[in-house]
Length: 113
Length: 115
Image (cartoon, rainbow over all chains, first blue to last red; front, side):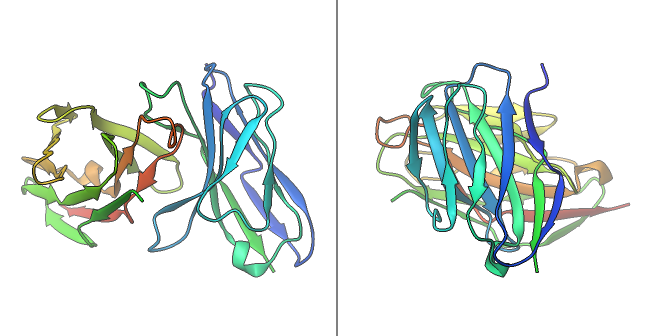
């Protein structure tokens, strides 16, 4: 199993550009989430999904869109990048409500100029 | 809503010293509790977990006990090594319907162990 994979690992954008961060898992996990990690602020939940076709907002959803058309994939779209979105982004998945430890991808380091 | 408060860092210890990182939580339901570790340039990985009161999670010499009466889940290790240098996150995940799939994390504690 590859676990949770994320692409790209690094990305530099200009203000106003859009892009999609890719996330995939091969563990047949029901739940998937996107977090951003900023210095001194821990991890903050952006969006999450409890199954294919079902998504919901987390703590900091503004400026981001998600969709989940398959169990495996959960892409995060930045609509119009802003410098405040400079961060490290982690995708995570968990198996079920009862078995709910998170498995994390390696992260995408995004810089918005 | 749910929240996790972690001991502020950074923490610097000498090799073989005793480690405690404090963690307390607030949750409306009956959560599972976790400690995750993050090494430089990597994602978080599960260190240990506990799912009910008085459960003790343990792994690689680290331990934490789920204390419902004090809403705490403190991380301990009797003798740290240089290789334990990392950032440690306390987290909770509610198994209820409304919070399924979400975890709440503390701000992280950076541990540096010197030889």
